[in-house]
Image 1: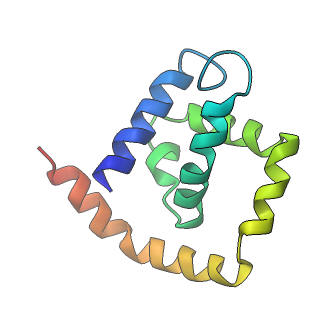
Image 2: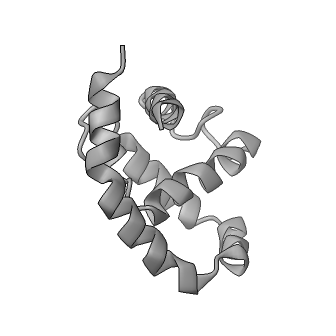
Length: 105
């Protein structure tokens, strides 16, 4: 989880400079990162960017990504039956994840 948190931080850092990860237009960089950010969202871990004022730009980026024509195809690979399980499991894991992140060197 520490690696995910670091990546979320780097994504936010870049998005504080540009609208998309590689500049001012949607690119392969966004396409490559979106599955990871979406999985965190499925696991109810969006607090990693929603509750950190230095990372809130991820919210806008995620909305822009979801509005692209290519994003609709991602839903074909999501098993709806597992989304509830992922949400519950992620919510249960949050205190543990927070503890891990606060104790890192």
